Image (cartoon, rainbow, N blue to C red; front, top):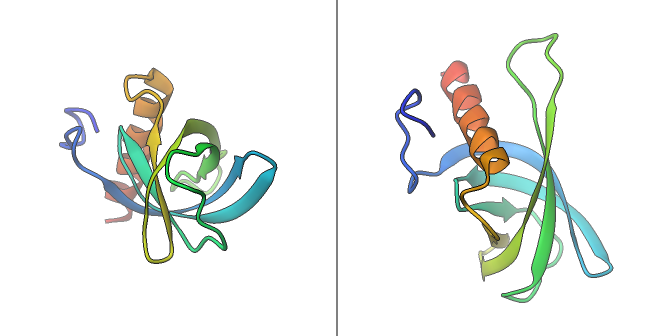
Length: 114
């Protein structure tokens, strides 16, 4: 969400990405419905961890090029709220360069798809 993509910090990138998550001894899978510099919305989860629960997400971006390798990312945060079919995560830090790069890459993938 840099000046190159025209996004701002408050914008969320609407994207569908498979994700795996873990909190405590629980592991699960869902879909990232949107993502930003400060958090992500995870949908299609069988469980909703309590608000405030520390959580780790493993997200893999698939570039639009057929021969490009996917870029795996680990995001650490806590559950911020529940949705109808999942939960929202707020990252522990929104200034992390790894998070910024991942969100910028997601915005570029969405833009390339048109």
